[in-house]
Image 1 (cartoon, each protein chain N blue to C red):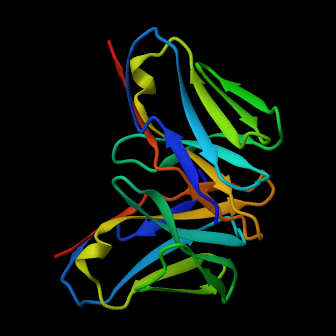
Image 2: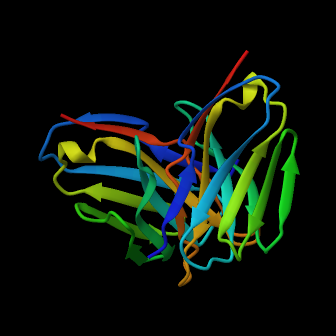
Amino acid sequence: ELKVEQNPLFLSMQEGKNYTIYCNYSTTSDRLYWYRQDPGKSLESLFVLLSNGAVKQEGRLMASLDTKARLSTLHITAAVHDLSATYFCAVEAQGGSEKLVFGKGTKLTVNP
Amino acid sequence: DAGITQSPRHKVTETGTPVTLRCHQTENHRYMYWYRQDPGHGLRLIHYSYGVKDTDKGEVSDGYSVSRSKTEDFLLTLESATSSQTSVYFCAISRAGQLYEQYFGPGTRLTVT
């Protein structure tokens, strides 16, 4: 059974600082996704990572995937208040039907 | 915008009452999903569909049933609502042509009293 663990679950940081969110998963998977959720809102897709060594960047966020270590990271560079949100990683379960298993999310608060 | 709507957006109901939530999509996607979101649990898959009349259980399917009689509609039914089913429910579609990313509807907040 696929399990996905994120850490930390809560992250409070100052504007301008860098930090990394980690996503570990327990079984082999072909795809990993990162989503963002603002309070009271739906989930917004950020990145899709398909292969070992994949790296995607959008603004101050950079995601990477190491399939051998079963680890993905979401790196935040020079954080700004607008990045405050909850970030989820999700891993595709094997067996078809494109099912995803989500981590519990990391609630990021960026303080001025 | 993946053209996903959910109805109702908010609902308060009493224990033991049947409840049906509707997910509607406008882009003819094959795969549709129902999740629930609870504090401390992230999103958990309830049921999913891979075509008209083709559905299967997810991680937390007990107490829920689904139906899909048309490509565009995926219904989630709580046969007899319980307080433990108080949650935010999200519908999602998977875009096969776009790396199978899942796109989420706006959510339904359900409170069972």
